[in-house]
Length: 277
Figure 1 (cartoon, rainbow, N blue to C red):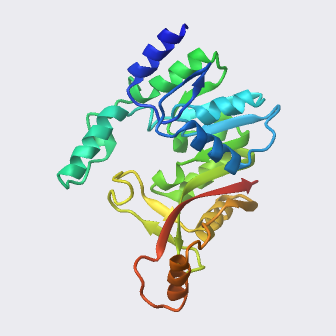
Figure 2 (cartoon, rainbow, N blue to C red):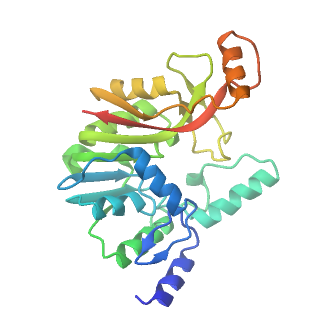
C-alpha cells in the first residue's frame, strides 16, 4: 500500500490502542511507541527464537507482531472482548456517563457489543495485512480455550488482562494450562501501605478508570500467591511496588506502618511477574 493509502486506512479505524510501526507509518495509539517499547523492556522477554508464543488479549497486536519480528517460530494472537467492542462508540458512551454521574452498563449489554462483526479487530487486521504478518488470529474467550484444542505455548503473554477477570485464580489456572514454560503477566496492582500479607482491592462498579470491566487490584504478595496457587512452580517479580520517593510518601508509609491514619493507603501501579511452570 502507498503511504497515502495506509494513512487513509489507519484513520478510518477510529480507535487505536497500540502505536504500531506500519512500515514507517505510526498508528495513533492511546499508548505511544515509547511507552510500548518501555513496557517491552520492562517485561524482560527472553530470546524467542524458535519459540511458540500466545498473546492473550492481543488488541491491536503490538506485542504479537513484536514477538514475530524477534524470531518466534509461531505466534497466536487471542482476543474476543476488545475485538467484539465498538471502541469509539463505547468511549463516547462512558464519557457521557461520567458527565451525568451515571454508572455505565457492562459493554456486553450495550449496542457497542458486536461479537459477530468484530468492530474492534479492524486495527489488528489492517496491521496484519500491511506487515504481511504470519501471526494467527484466534477470536475466542480465552477461558473457553483448552490446551487440547489450541495446544500449549513456550511463552504466554497475559498483559493488562488479569484485573479485568471476575475470578483471577480461575483465569491464572487457564493461563497455566496453556503455558509450557513461561507466562509473562502484567497487571494493574496496588501497594497497600503497612500490609505485607496477600490482599487485593475490589472494584464492584467503575471505580477504576470509569471502566466496569475492572474488578481487582492485587498487591504483589497476592499476585505471586495467585500464580503459585494456579499451578506455576516459580514466580519472579520483574516490576514490583514503586519506591517510596518523596519525603511525603515516606512519611505516609511510616504512618501506615504505625497504624496512624493519613489519607489513602493504597497506591496503584503496574506490576510484572514471570511465572514459570
